[in-house]
Image (cartoon, rainbow, N blue to C red; front, side):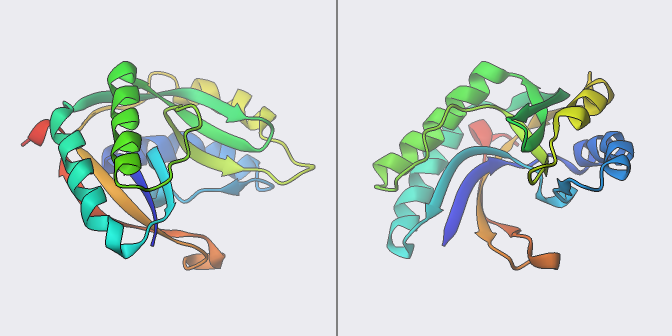
Length: 186
């Protein structure tokens, strides 16, 4: 099963970010826009996880979640990875969020699951460009629209299954398969 560990934004955050993104999305049809229901903050990308390792993985991730506290997070601006990926910046309890990502990666490594250890950057991926298109102009347009965006308290960490090419138009579909309360939040 192809999996990743993530935080999922609330419907209120999704609606607010979607409203801010709408005029830029309409003006930039050359970009491949990520559907709002697929927005998430990836803590650890796990790739293909053998079924026999899932129980150990989930037990270790549950412990990591219980040791973490709920997070106050906000969407605050836009950015890019190169010319190809447009994202919304996630701010707030950034240090605690970084530590949660490290804990999720460590839990996966202890469960003998190889982890992508690229530098953690808290973001929601919004769109991608295929050359010769670029996201540069979209970042400049979107950044002020996302400043001082919605704030929420995130209380759950999830393992999400990625079903490649199974959604509308061949896009991936995401399905949460396990979730834990942060700090055993109520």
